[in-house]
Image 1: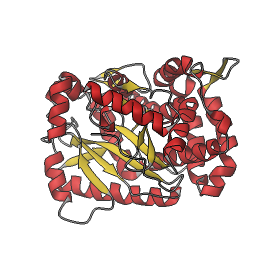
Image 2 (image 1 turned 180 degrees about the horizontal axis):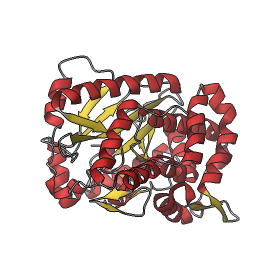
Image 3 (image 1 turned 30 degrees about the vertical axis):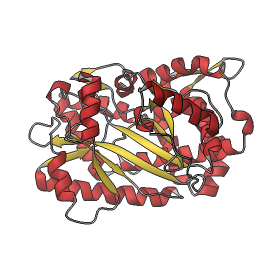
Image 4 (image 1 turned 120 degrees about the vertical axis):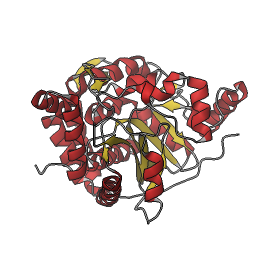
Length: 375
């Protein structure tokens, strides 16, 4: 169907979506529990929204629209507590992490929903391999042109969000040596990667119409880009992040994105060129493979900068914007992550301590339930 107009929304408002793991507490493998869990959750008010994902071992939760980090965290905490209680009734653990450490994709079941069946018919085994878990963050935009400006201006910060959220070091019982192996699964889809460099909504609408005429896409959902516009919501959507192990980290990542976008709105010169995108794939790989220890190429002088150092520099730059938005708590946790390491580091330490992948899952479930350790 034709791409509709961009619905204006309040700039810099935010919402979060989290894809979560449903785990059997008997063997710590993924469990095809979403139909039963959704039925149970439908019987009482839910403090957000909860929907199925492509396989029955996943759920997606979503917050409402928020202006500040504290309100976002409060709702995510209420959602977590509701999910954990419901899971307890079904002997199902609820957890974060970008991949399950040892699940086998062939064991997964496609959720009975027409769109998921269509995706499965089109992409074959990739659909079951899509049992990976990400965080999406929406940021409100005044109009379509602003949305496209922010979408492309953010290219420079893509490695930050990959590295800070990285929580998928293990796949099918093996250490991948990646901090975020999840994004390798996303990259297998033909409409993944980055959006085309179009900076006016009129031109983007024309592009969508051409793509629709080819029969390749029917809606924006068919694009698996790292960042994409969502005209029906009036937002841009960051889709790069692994699902963190705690809702506190999820809220902090949203607050960090909000503060960076606030800074970029004051920097009209942040519009990228085709030359800026030459290193996009390299920078993205560095963040996936090495996380905060990776190196990115920045600026016309092609300076090589450690990702950790670049995040810390950005935290100083966005500090006044974060203060105005009430996001200081988010910045504090992001700062802590740069020093203590991402969730991928936590999961590897759990494996070193326990020696079995089941122990890694058990620890991740406990961390999701309890929340972020007190600093």
